[in-house]
Image 1 (cartoon, rainbow, N blue to C red):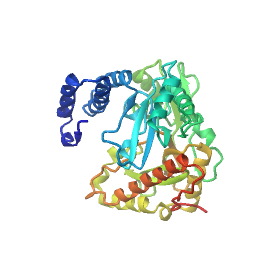
Image 2 (image 1 turned 120 degrees about the vertical axis):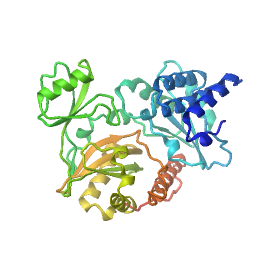
Image 3 (image 1 turned 180 degrees about the horizontal axis):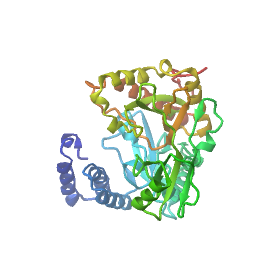
Image 4 (image 1 turned 60 degrees about the horizontal axis):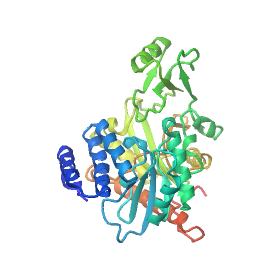
Amino acid sequence: MLDLAEFSNDPLLARETLLARLKVAGTAGEQAQLHYRLWEMCQVCGDEVAALSHLEAAIHLDPVQRPDRSDEGAVRRIVVLNVPGTFQANAPLAMLLDDSTALYTMWVSGEPGRREELAERIRKLKPDAGILAMGEDARQTAAILEAEAIGRTSGVPVLNGEERIMQMARSTVPEILENIPGLLVPACRVVCAPFDTLPSFPLLARPVSSHAGDSLARIDNRADFDRYVHETGASGSYYVTQFIDYVSKDGLYRKYRVVFVDGVPYPVHLAIHDDWAIWYYNAKMEQFPERRVEEARFMLDMTAVFPSSVMEALYEIPQRIGLNYFGLDFGVLQDETLVVFEVETAMIVHDRDPDDIFPYKSACITRIRQAFERMIDKHAYAGVSVEKDTTYSMS
Protein backbone atom coordinates (compact mmCIF):
# COMPACT_ATOMS: atom_id res chain seq x y z
CA MET A 1 0.00 0.00 0.00
CA LEU A 2 1.18 3.52 -0.79
CA ASP A 3 2.74 5.31 2.18
CA LEU A 4 1.26 8.80 2.12
CA ALA A 5 3.59 10.16 4.80
CA GLU A 6 5.92 11.49 2.12
CA PHE A 7 3.01 13.49 0.68
CA SER A 8 1.89 14.99 3.99
CA ASN A 9 2.52 18.53 2.77
CA ASP A 10 1.00 18.02 -0.67
CA PRO A 11 -2.42 16.33 -0.52
CA LEU A 12 -3.15 17.18 -4.16
CA LEU A 13 -0.08 15.24 -5.26
CA ALA A 14 -1.09 12.37 -2.98
CA ARG A 15 -4.53 12.27 -4.58
CA GLU A 16 -3.08 12.23 -8.09
CA THR A 17 -0.65 9.48 -7.12
CA LEU A 18 -3.49 7.38 -5.71
CA LEU A 19 -5.59 7.92 -8.84
CA ALA A 20 -2.67 6.76 -10.97
CA ARG A 21 -2.31 3.64 -8.82
CA LEU A 22 -6.05 2.97 -9.12
CA LYS A 23 -5.85 2.84 -12.93
CA VAL A 24 -3.40 -0.07 -12.83
CA ALA A 25 -4.72 -1.87 -9.73
CA GLY A 26 -5.35 -5.51 -10.52
CA THR A 27 -7.78 -6.99 -8.02
CA ALA A 28 -11.04 -5.67 -6.61
CA GLY A 29 -9.46 -5.75 -3.17
CA GLU A 30 -6.57 -3.54 -4.26
CA GLN A 31 -8.98 -1.13 -5.92
CA ALA A 32 -11.12 -0.96 -2.79
CA GLN A 33 -8.19 -0.04 -0.54
CA LEU A 34 -7.12 2.70 -2.98
CA HIS A 35 -10.67 4.06 -3.03
CA TYR A 36 -10.60 4.18 0.79
CA ARG A 37 -7.40 6.20 0.71
CA LEU A 38 -8.88 8.49 -1.92
CA TRP A 39 -11.91 9.01 0.34
CA GLU A 40 -9.49 10.31 2.95
CA MET A 41 -7.35 12.41 0.61
CA CYS A 42 -10.25 14.01 -1.25
CA GLN A 43 -11.61 15.27 2.06
CA VAL A 44 -8.21 16.73 2.90
CA CYS A 45 -8.31 18.45 -0.50
CA GLY A 46 -11.78 19.82 0.24
CA ASP A 47 -13.68 17.73 -2.33
CA GLU A 48 -16.36 16.06 -0.23
CA VAL A 49 -18.45 14.93 -3.21
CA ALA A 50 -15.53 13.04 -4.74
CA ALA A 51 -14.61 11.63 -1.33
CA LEU A 52 -18.06 10.12 -0.77
CA SER A 53 -18.05 8.75 -4.33
CA HIS A 54 -14.78 6.94 -3.64
CA LEU A 55 -16.13 5.63 -0.35
CA GLU A 56 -19.23 4.23 -2.07
CA ALA A 57 -17.04 2.52 -4.68
CA ALA A 58 -14.79 1.08 -1.97
CA ILE A 59 -17.65 -0.35 0.07
CA HIS A 60 -19.14 -1.94 -3.06
CA LEU A 61 -15.83 -3.66 -3.84
CA ASP A 62 -14.91 -4.66 -0.29
CA PRO A 63 -16.67 -3.42 2.88
CA VAL A 64 -13.54 -4.08 4.96
CA GLN A 65 -10.86 -1.41 5.02
CA ARG A 66 -7.55 -2.93 5.98
CA PRO A 67 -4.58 -1.50 7.92
CA ASP A 68 -2.06 0.50 5.92
CA ARG A 69 0.71 -1.80 7.12
CA SER A 70 1.04 -5.49 7.81
CA ASP A 71 -0.48 -6.57 11.11
CA GLU A 72 2.43 -8.90 11.75
CA GLY A 73 3.62 -8.32 15.29
CA ALA A 74 0.43 -6.58 16.42
CA VAL A 75 -0.58 -7.34 20.01
CA ARG A 76 -4.29 -7.19 19.32
CA ARG A 77 -6.69 -7.01 16.40
CA ILE A 78 -9.96 -5.06 16.43
CA VAL A 79 -12.78 -4.46 13.98
CA VAL A 80 -14.25 -0.96 13.96
CA LEU A 81 -17.79 -0.70 12.59
CA ASN A 82 -18.42 2.54 10.69
CA VAL A 83 -21.27 4.08 8.73
CA PRO A 84 -20.64 5.91 5.43
CA GLY A 85 -19.97 9.62 5.62
CA THR A 86 -17.24 12.20 6.07
CA PHE A 87 -14.55 12.23 8.74
CA GLN A 88 -17.15 13.50 11.22
CA ALA A 89 -19.42 10.45 10.89
CA ASN A 90 -17.21 8.08 12.90
CA ALA A 91 -14.51 8.22 15.56
CA PRO A 92 -11.12 8.14 13.77
CA LEU A 93 -9.59 5.52 16.05
CA ALA A 94 -6.63 5.07 13.73
CA MET A 95 -5.49 8.53 14.88
CA LEU A 96 -5.37 7.28 18.49
CA LEU A 97 -3.95 3.78 18.12
CA ASP A 98 -0.43 2.72 17.13
CA ASP A 99 0.94 -0.32 15.32
CA SER A 100 0.51 -2.55 18.37
CA THR A 101 -3.20 -2.69 17.45
CA ALA A 102 -4.20 -3.91 14.00
CA LEU A 103 -7.34 -1.99 13.05
CA TYR A 104 -9.79 -3.25 10.45
CA THR A 105 -12.79 -1.12 9.55
CA MET A 106 -16.07 -2.64 8.39
CA TRP A 107 -18.29 -0.11 6.63
CA VAL A 108 -22.00 -0.79 7.10
CA SER A 109 -24.46 1.00 4.83
CA GLY A 110 -27.60 -0.65 6.21
CA GLU A 111 -28.10 -2.64 3.02
CA PRO A 112 -30.57 -5.46 3.86
CA GLY A 113 -29.80 -9.14 3.48
CA ARG A 114 -26.06 -9.03 4.20
CA ARG A 115 -26.03 -9.49 7.97
CA GLU A 116 -24.77 -13.06 8.07
CA GLU A 117 -22.29 -12.45 5.25
CA LEU A 118 -20.74 -9.47 7.01
CA ALA A 119 -20.79 -11.23 10.39
CA GLU A 120 -18.85 -14.07 8.80
CA ARG A 121 -16.35 -11.57 7.39
CA ILE A 122 -15.77 -10.36 10.94
CA ARG A 123 -15.29 -13.89 12.24
CA LYS A 124 -12.73 -14.65 9.53
CA LEU A 125 -10.66 -11.67 10.63
CA LYS A 126 -10.41 -13.32 14.08
CA PRO A 127 -10.46 -10.02 15.99
CA ASP A 128 -10.08 -9.78 19.74
CA ALA A 129 -13.02 -7.38 19.86
CA GLY A 130 -15.09 -4.95 17.86
CA ILE A 131 -16.32 -1.44 18.58
CA LEU A 132 -19.11 0.69 17.17
CA ALA A 133 -17.43 3.99 16.33
CA MET A 134 -20.18 5.96 14.59
CA GLY A 135 -21.60 9.19 15.91
CA GLU A 136 -25.30 9.58 16.67
CA ASP A 137 -27.13 10.70 13.54
CA ALA A 138 -30.85 10.22 12.89
CA ARG A 139 -30.09 9.88 9.17
CA GLN A 140 -27.97 6.81 9.93
CA THR A 141 -30.32 5.02 12.31
CA ALA A 142 -30.86 1.99 10.04
CA ALA A 143 -27.14 1.58 9.38
CA ILE A 144 -26.18 1.95 13.05
CA LEU A 145 -28.76 -0.60 14.17
CA GLU A 146 -27.68 -2.97 11.41
CA ALA A 147 -24.05 -2.60 12.46
CA GLU A 148 -25.07 -3.56 16.00
CA ALA A 149 -26.91 -6.61 14.67
CA ILE A 150 -23.91 -7.65 12.57
CA GLY A 151 -21.68 -7.37 15.61
CA ARG A 152 -24.00 -9.51 17.71
CA THR A 153 -24.32 -12.11 14.97
CA SER A 154 -20.54 -12.38 14.64
CA GLY A 155 -20.19 -13.56 18.23
CA VAL A 156 -17.25 -11.20 18.76
CA PRO A 157 -17.27 -8.98 21.89
CA VAL A 158 -18.51 -5.59 20.61
CA LEU A 159 -18.17 -2.38 22.62
CA ASN A 160 -20.56 0.61 22.56
CA GLY A 161 -23.56 -1.59 21.77
CA GLU A 162 -27.04 -2.07 23.23
CA GLU A 163 -28.39 0.76 21.02
CA ARG A 164 -26.73 3.29 23.32
CA ILE A 165 -25.32 5.40 20.48
CA MET A 166 -28.78 6.26 19.19
CA GLN A 167 -29.67 7.60 22.65
CA MET A 168 -26.95 10.27 22.45
CA ALA A 169 -29.03 12.84 20.54
CA ARG A 170 -28.76 16.37 21.90
CA SER A 171 -32.46 16.29 22.75
CA THR A 172 -32.29 13.07 24.80
CA VAL A 173 -29.04 13.52 26.74
CA PRO A 174 -30.53 16.11 29.15
CA GLU A 175 -33.03 13.54 30.37
CA ILE A 176 -30.38 10.82 30.71
CA LEU A 177 -28.14 13.08 32.80
CA GLU A 178 -30.79 14.88 34.81
CA ASN A 179 -30.50 15.27 38.60
CA ILE A 180 -26.76 14.67 38.82
CA PRO A 181 -25.50 16.91 41.64
CA GLY A 182 -23.31 19.74 40.42
CA LEU A 183 -24.17 19.15 36.75
CA LEU A 184 -26.27 21.20 34.34
CA VAL A 185 -27.40 20.00 30.91
CA PRO A 186 -29.16 22.85 29.09
CA ALA A 187 -32.65 21.97 27.90
CA CYS A 188 -32.70 21.03 24.22
CA ARG A 189 -35.47 20.03 21.85
CA VAL A 190 -36.18 19.57 18.16
CA VAL A 191 -38.37 22.20 16.48
CA CYS A 192 -39.83 22.23 12.98
CA ALA A 193 -41.88 24.67 10.89
CA PRO A 194 -44.03 26.60 11.67
CA PHE A 195 -41.97 27.08 14.87
CA ASP A 196 -44.96 28.14 16.95
CA THR A 197 -43.32 27.41 20.30
CA LEU A 198 -39.71 28.16 21.13
CA PRO A 199 -37.78 28.19 24.39
CA SER A 200 -37.01 31.52 25.96
CA PHE A 201 -34.24 33.56 24.38
CA PRO A 202 -31.29 33.60 24.15
CA LEU A 203 -30.94 30.16 22.62
CA LEU A 204 -28.57 28.20 20.41
CA ALA A 205 -29.88 26.83 17.12
CA ARG A 206 -28.39 24.35 14.71
CA PRO A 207 -29.78 21.98 12.06
CA VAL A 208 -30.48 18.46 13.32
CA SER A 209 -27.64 16.06 12.40
CA SER A 210 -25.13 18.91 12.06
CA HIS A 211 -21.75 18.64 13.76
CA ALA A 212 -18.63 20.69 14.50
CA GLY A 213 -20.55 23.94 14.79
CA ASP A 214 -21.99 23.78 11.28
CA SER A 215 -24.65 26.55 11.07
CA LEU A 216 -24.60 26.95 14.86
CA ALA A 217 -25.88 30.39 15.93
CA ARG A 218 -26.84 32.22 19.08
CA ILE A 219 -30.34 33.66 18.67
CA ASP A 220 -31.49 36.54 20.88
CA ASN A 221 -35.03 37.17 19.60
CA ARG A 222 -37.77 35.86 17.29
CA ALA A 223 -36.84 38.12 14.38
CA ASP A 224 -33.27 36.79 14.47
CA PHE A 225 -34.60 33.22 14.57
CA ASP A 226 -36.84 33.76 11.53
CA ARG A 227 -33.90 35.25 9.65
CA TYR A 228 -31.68 32.32 10.66
CA VAL A 229 -34.24 29.75 9.47
CA HIS A 230 -34.62 31.56 6.15
CA GLU A 231 -30.85 31.52 5.62
CA THR A 232 -30.32 27.86 6.58
CA GLY A 233 -33.44 26.32 4.99
CA ALA A 234 -36.98 26.87 6.27
CA SER A 235 -38.04 23.27 5.69
CA GLY A 236 -35.46 21.86 8.09
CA SER A 237 -35.58 20.65 11.66
CA TYR A 238 -33.44 22.32 14.30
CA TYR A 239 -32.06 21.67 17.74
CA VAL A 240 -32.75 24.65 19.97
CA THR A 241 -30.87 24.73 23.24
CA GLN A 242 -31.03 27.08 26.18
CA PHE A 243 -27.94 29.32 26.04
CA ILE A 244 -25.89 29.26 29.23
CA ASP A 245 -23.30 31.99 29.62
CA TYR A 246 -20.27 30.09 30.91
CA VAL A 247 -17.81 33.00 30.90
CA SER A 248 -15.11 32.80 33.57
CA LYS A 249 -14.30 35.55 36.03
CA ASP A 250 -11.44 36.77 33.83
CA GLY A 251 -13.81 37.31 30.89
CA LEU A 252 -12.60 34.28 28.93
CA TYR A 253 -14.48 31.14 27.94
CA ARG A 254 -13.08 27.66 28.61
CA LYS A 255 -14.20 24.54 26.79
CA TYR A 256 -12.86 21.31 28.23
CA ARG A 257 -12.76 18.00 26.37
CA VAL A 258 -12.39 14.60 28.00
CA VAL A 259 -12.79 11.10 26.67
CA PHE A 260 -14.19 8.30 28.83
CA VAL A 261 -12.52 4.91 28.56
CA ASP A 262 -14.28 2.21 30.57
CA GLY A 263 -15.81 4.84 32.85
CA VAL A 264 -12.63 6.83 33.53
CA PRO A 265 -12.31 10.41 32.17
CA TYR A 266 -9.06 11.38 30.45
CA PRO A 267 -8.26 14.98 29.40
CA VAL A 268 -7.96 15.55 25.65
CA HIS A 269 -7.59 19.34 25.44
CA LEU A 270 -8.68 22.71 26.79
CA ALA A 271 -9.65 25.53 24.44
CA ILE A 272 -9.66 29.10 25.82
CA HIS A 273 -11.19 31.98 23.87
CA ASP A 274 -12.74 35.41 24.33
CA ASP A 275 -15.85 34.21 22.46
CA TRP A 276 -18.40 31.63 23.64
CA ALA A 277 -18.29 29.81 20.28
CA ILE A 278 -15.12 27.77 20.81
CA TRP A 279 -13.56 24.99 18.82
CA TYR A 280 -9.96 24.04 19.30
CA TYR A 281 -9.00 25.29 15.85
CA ASN A 282 -10.39 28.81 16.41
CA ALA A 283 -8.99 29.14 19.95
CA LYS A 284 -5.50 29.31 18.36
CA MET A 285 -3.87 28.05 21.54
CA GLU A 286 -0.49 28.01 19.80
CA GLN A 287 -0.52 31.83 19.93
CA PHE A 288 -1.06 32.08 23.71
CA PRO A 289 1.72 30.59 25.90
CA GLU A 290 -0.09 31.47 29.13
CA ARG A 291 -3.20 29.61 27.97
CA ARG A 292 -1.11 26.57 27.09
CA VAL A 293 0.28 26.59 30.62
CA GLU A 294 -3.30 26.34 31.87
CA GLU A 295 -4.10 23.60 29.37
CA ALA A 296 -1.04 21.66 30.52
CA ARG A 297 -2.21 21.81 34.14
CA PHE A 298 -5.61 20.46 33.10
CA MET A 299 -4.23 17.68 30.94
CA LEU A 300 -1.55 16.54 33.36
CA ASP A 301 -3.75 16.49 36.49
CA MET A 302 -7.31 17.72 36.21
CA THR A 303 -8.04 16.72 39.81
CA ALA A 304 -5.81 19.65 40.81
CA VAL A 305 -7.79 22.00 38.55
CA PHE A 306 -11.38 21.06 39.35
CA PRO A 307 -13.16 21.00 42.71
CA SER A 308 -14.29 17.60 43.95
CA SER A 309 -17.89 18.36 42.91
CA VAL A 310 -16.86 18.57 39.24
CA MET A 311 -14.89 15.32 39.43
CA GLU A 312 -17.80 13.57 41.12
CA ALA A 313 -20.16 14.76 38.38
CA LEU A 314 -17.69 13.57 35.73
CA TYR A 315 -17.65 10.09 37.23
CA GLU A 316 -21.44 9.91 37.37
CA ILE A 317 -21.80 10.70 33.65
CA PRO A 318 -20.48 7.37 32.25
CA GLN A 319 -22.69 5.46 34.68
CA ARG A 320 -25.72 7.11 33.05
CA ILE A 321 -24.46 7.05 29.46
CA GLY A 322 -23.54 3.36 29.51
CA LEU A 323 -20.97 3.48 26.68
CA ASN A 324 -17.49 1.97 26.87
CA TYR A 325 -15.85 4.80 24.93
CA PHE A 326 -17.15 8.32 24.28
CA GLY A 327 -16.20 11.97 24.57
CA LEU A 328 -17.57 14.98 26.41
CA ASP A 329 -17.25 18.72 25.82
CA PHE A 330 -18.12 20.86 28.85
CA GLY A 331 -17.54 24.08 30.72
CA VAL A 332 -17.46 25.01 34.39
CA LEU A 333 -19.60 27.91 35.60
CA GLN A 334 -18.38 30.46 38.11
CA ASP A 335 -20.35 28.68 40.83
CA GLU A 336 -18.40 25.44 39.98
CA THR A 337 -21.32 23.78 38.19
CA LEU A 338 -20.30 21.50 35.31
CA VAL A 339 -22.28 22.46 32.19
CA VAL A 340 -22.51 19.83 29.45
CA PHE A 341 -22.12 20.98 25.85
CA GLU A 342 -22.08 17.66 24.00
CA VAL A 343 -21.77 13.92 24.47
CA GLU A 344 -20.10 12.52 21.37
CA THR A 345 -19.16 9.00 20.28
CA ALA A 346 -17.28 10.15 17.14
CA MET A 347 -14.86 12.47 18.91
CA ILE A 348 -11.34 12.95 17.54
CA VAL A 349 -8.44 12.06 19.83
CA HIS A 350 -4.96 12.39 18.31
CA ASP A 351 -1.30 13.04 19.03
CA ARG A 352 -0.44 15.23 16.04
CA ASP A 353 0.17 18.61 17.65
CA PRO A 354 3.80 19.79 17.45
CA ASP A 355 5.85 18.79 20.49
CA ASP A 356 7.79 22.06 20.53
CA ILE A 357 4.57 24.02 21.14
CA PHE A 358 2.56 21.42 23.09
CA PRO A 359 5.21 19.33 24.91
CA TYR A 360 2.68 18.06 27.47
CA LYS A 361 0.20 16.48 25.06
CA SER A 362 2.01 13.36 23.89
CA ALA A 363 2.16 11.73 27.32
CA CYS A 364 -1.52 12.49 27.94
CA ILE A 365 -2.67 11.01 24.64
CA THR A 366 -0.44 7.99 25.26
CA ARG A 367 -2.33 7.41 28.52
CA ILE A 368 -5.62 7.43 26.61
CA ARG A 369 -4.27 4.96 24.06
CA GLN A 370 -3.03 2.64 26.79
CA ALA A 371 -6.38 2.84 28.58
CA PHE A 372 -8.15 2.01 25.31
CA GLU A 373 -5.86 -0.98 24.82
CA ARG A 374 -6.59 -2.23 28.35
CA MET A 375 -10.31 -1.84 27.69
CA ILE A 376 -10.10 -3.94 24.51
CA ASP A 377 -8.00 -6.57 26.26
CA LYS A 378 -10.41 -6.75 29.18
CA HIS A 379 -13.40 -7.37 26.94
CA ALA A 380 -11.48 -9.75 24.69
CA TYR A 381 -10.35 -11.85 27.63
CA ALA A 382 -13.32 -11.58 29.96
CA GLY A 383 -12.54 -13.13 33.31
CA VAL A 384 -8.78 -12.57 32.98
CA SER A 385 -7.37 -9.92 35.31
CA VAL A 386 -6.33 -6.76 33.44
CA GLU A 387 -4.63 -3.89 35.28
CA LYS A 388 -6.78 -0.74 35.32
CA ASP A 389 -5.63 2.87 35.33
CA THR A 390 -6.98 4.49 38.50
CA THR A 391 -5.27 7.87 38.16
CA TYR A 392 -8.55 9.76 38.35
CA SER A 393 -10.42 7.22 40.48
CA MET A 394 -12.78 8.71 43.05
CA SER A 395 -12.57 5.65 45.27
